[in-house]
Image (cartoon, rainbow, N blue to C red; front, side):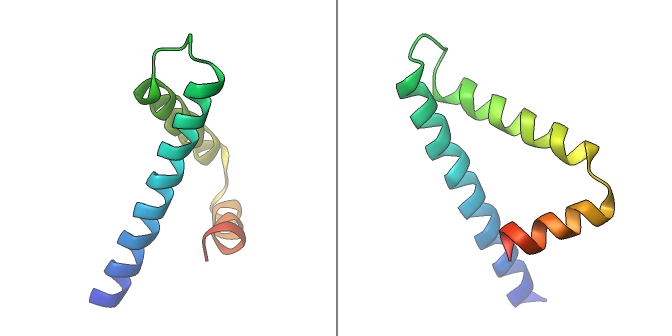
Length: 68
C-alpha cells in the first residue's frame, strides 16, 4: 500500500508540474492574461470538465494510455 501511495504521489507531482509548465508557456504566449496562476486554474478547470464528461470506462482507457 505504501508503494502504491508513493507511485500515486509521484504521478500527481508529475501532472501538477506539467500543468505548471503549460501555464508558464501560455503566460509567455498570451501575456495580457492575468498570470500563471490564472492559466493554471483554467487548465485544471478544463481538465475537470473533460473528466466529468468521461464514463468510468473512458477514464480507465485514458489512464492506461497516458498515465501508466
